[in-house]
Image 1 (cartoon, one colour):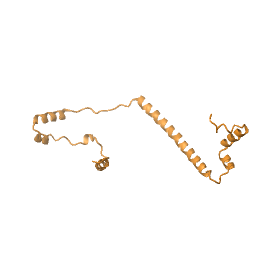
Image 2 (tube, rainbow, N blue to C red; image 1 turned 45 degrees about the vertical axis):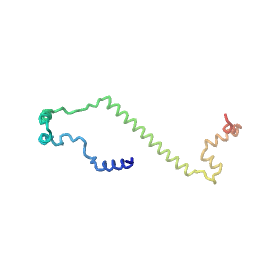
Image 3 (cartoon, one colour; image 1 turned 180 degrees about the vertical axis):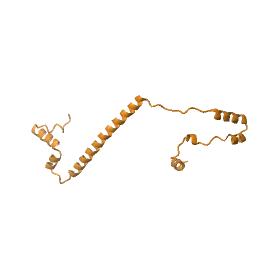
Image 4 (tube, rainbow, N blue to C red; image 1 turned 90 degrees about the vertical axis):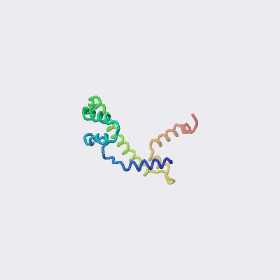
Length: 143
């Protein structure tokens, strides 16, 4: 049995599942047919006991109370996520502008040193300062 064959068969089985229907249907489930169970099971007393327990049982609905502390914590996390999203969007916009700028000022064989100085003024100032102070070799020699 190949692994990919098993995956393919599992995917085919899952494709036939109706994912829109809920797993637990609550009150919409049909009642249990104890009459057919009594016909097919040898121990009828067991089925009778189960039927009596089923008809007499009415468990209370399970409810969950969301605590105020937990609500406040989740609300705070949501606000932090929104702030992070706004920051991320701003970073994306800045990065897209920088990419566009770098594409316009792309270095080619026809690029002159003066062009690079215009595009990268910080680096040009650093280079000029190192040349003036005669420190141009500090980046080339091991420290």
